[in-house]
Length: 162
Image 1: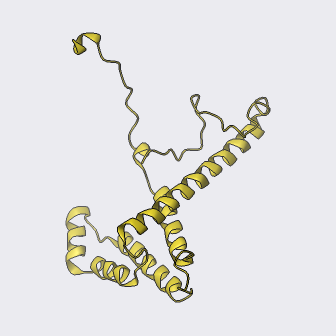
Image 2 (image 1 turned 135 degrees about the vertical axis):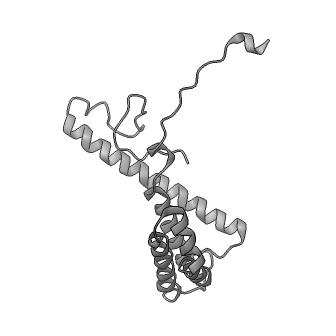
Image 3 (image 1 turned 90 degrees about the vertical axis):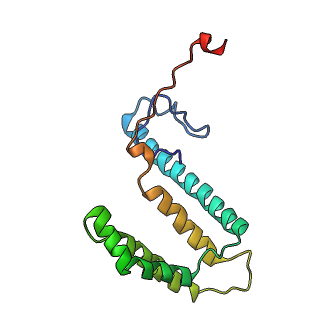
């Protein structure tokens, strides 16, 4: 994915059309506050876009967006002996973080599964909450821009095209 989670502003960053960027250029404190507000707004827009993508993707694939059986199977698979041995072989210790994530998914599923009405499939609050949670998880984790720097693109020599 190609998003930038940093809150620092770069010289090539384009200001939003509805922001008052030109009025606040002289004041460093208001520019900083505006930058934080802008990055929070950008994050909110990206989460909304990802939530819409998750919603459409779950409709296309025909998968149930929230299945307690799948979450439970994933949790049991995480705590299985073979999974833990594989974790010890690969990383040198037990992989409790992945199991913790699976447990939280299963707990979330049980909490939402029995607290909603399934009468209107278009207004399925359970699916909306599940998709929002998945969308927020995507932007919480590390991305490739945290590790790698963008490589500059150099123009090709015109002799290569002949």
